[in-house]
Amino acid sequence: MTVADANLDEHTDRGPLGRDELAGVVARDIRPGWYVNLGIGQPTLVANHLAPDSGVTLHTENGMLGMGPLASGDAVDLDLLNAGKEPVTELPGAAYFHHADSFAMMRGGHLDLCVLGAFQVSATGDLANWHTGDPDAVPAVGGAMDLAVGARQVFVMMSLFTKAGTAKLVPSCSYPLTALRCVDRVYTDVATFEITARAVVVRETWGLSYDELCTRVEVPLVRGYP
Amino acid sequence: MSVVCDSADEAVAGVADGSTVLVGGFGMAGMPVHLIDALIRQGATDLTVVSNNAGNADTGLAALLAAGRVRKILCSFPRQADSWVFDGLYRSGRIELEVVPQGNLAERMRAAGAGIGAFYCPTGVGTMLAEGKETREIGGRTYVLEYPIAGDVALIGAHVADRRGNLVYRKTGRNFGPVMATAATTTIAEVRHVVEVGDLDPEAVVTPGIYVDRVVRVPA
Image (cartoon, rainbow over all chains, first blue to last red):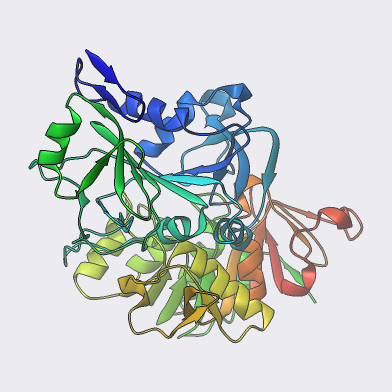
């Protein structure tokens, strides 16, 4: 049974979203004409759900707008890579630029959106996605801090719970931060959240109800739009 | 004045011990592999390397690291599936690492090449990478003071050069090349084609030859 009131969709007649379904949910909220950076890993799946006529232009931080799908066979060109260093293709109207320009366009607020993975997101939109804090880990940040600070909107895409069952939406991040107060929306396998100046608002749930969600997340939640 | 060299070995001649070397490339795109191999043969040591990554597999930058020539590396993303050479050196305390957000890495080199003394940047505010750095609130937003990164030498890869050192890149092979070219005392470019003066469309030149000291053609 799906209970859909004006502000909140609860899909309790099914299980959590699969990774590809989640990518489809994120893609649904990307408006035609936006310039978008999809982070390495799970966010790259979002590209598969953007219609060719959507007018969405993909940015890759290594210096390209108008990035096309992954390349295969004869289309592989080692001069044409995405941020994950995989061979990709170029679409008509593509443009190349150097790294300082690429990050200037990001930092300067010209990208409409970036979609990033996360270890934790706080109730106020702080993001932790680059370092687990493990002293033995080799630290590596890439473009995560620049993207989180620069894009006009930041969507996070992640599973809501760790393997141990702990929520990754937290009152305050325990992992080292990527950026402060930068996340606008959090898309997870069991719920989507909007982080506003006043509250964390639940927009949609899958496989559990809003009331069950509230018992499993330490962050105070608000039903639907405030 | 740019010089077209006959070999990569000639191109890297004179790189001094203790130099800061900017190394272009993102993945294999724009990676100056022939110049790095020549630098290994040349023997300069105690180097500080600035590059986006810290080497992959056992070739190129990883081979330079493995040869024990690098004291310190500044990069945004050292950890890769095949970065075992760096990982081993780092874990055994044999290389110093400064992790720099990718955009700051580019902008700090841009500042060096453009004569900017330092700049306030919003990236990293409130994170451990900004600890100990000066901050300032400007227009209600907090910024971190970041200093330039200049190189003694830049090793970059481009697609075509003319004999004045004007460079054209190809696709995402451009990446750090144009910025590094401006930020080093001596910029050395490996290219797939060298053409005569007048053969490049001046409107299409990405790196003007004023920034390029030595060029060497390498197999495509």
